[in-house]
Length: 394
Image (cartoon, helix red, strand yellow):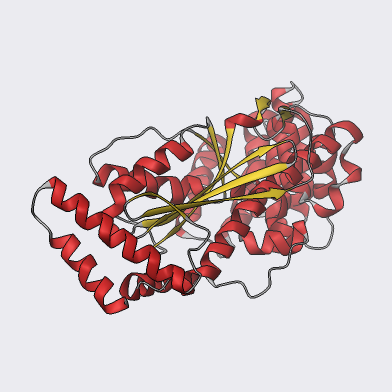
């Protein structure tokens, strides 16, 4: 069956006759594709929605808030759950670009503890226009896409496929949970791949999961042979990715709600204090200044100088916005005493522009220039020192 199907698909790609003949060939190819795969049981639970386009729906119970919506801390406003579409794709390549095709699109909608996941499969490249139309109906019913690295990869690739098929689409608002994961957990768990977040944060361990780099080859194997058996682990992997999106979204919302109600000490042990503190001060929420000061004054194991510098920078900006800019000097002075390059620069700025102590500012800059520095930093400091010396000579 595989060799005959491959020949028929090849004919379909090269076919130049009337639309009616093309539709007949698409239909027969699609029927052979599905019937052949069904022999192996691989697509038995999938339904045809167009030639070379198949879909299936899965419902999963997920504990979470009841009702139609919530006050979202991630989006900063009240939302209805119907606005959210949890979205993920599988593609024929991992690097993107015009040569990469989306062959599997999943969307999930959360309603009162039940997640309905719809997965749509492109049976072969000639079916892409119909596939994209169905995907459009599937994804654009929601106003917000929730993804993991979807802002940089999935949505851009979807947009590219539409453009290559002569259609322009406007991508909805996006909530990319990768950025939130990096903010809250990168300094704690290191890599923030979805798999790492599942294991370290959500407590989910996958069994016999297919590696991401294998997925394109499995799809091309399906196109060559018509046997979809090799795609079964891909379907399962894709479904788990989408469910992890839902669980991660709910986990983040619940964590931020707990912090808002009970303060930072309830959850901070498993969150990056710098990331959480920066988030809280950006929202003007209680506890942010306390967290950032704690990182600067009493760092915990793993809270290195670069994170402490970020904490000082975020806290300094918050203090200046609140009319308390004079308090920033002590933050940088503490880190400068421990050898921080950035703190030395900030300390020199304060001495020159606010305290009027040009000589001490010049001494700090001269000390910094004796360090091993990248050329850009060295040039900037040399320029600053020259200006300070001119002031001293005047």
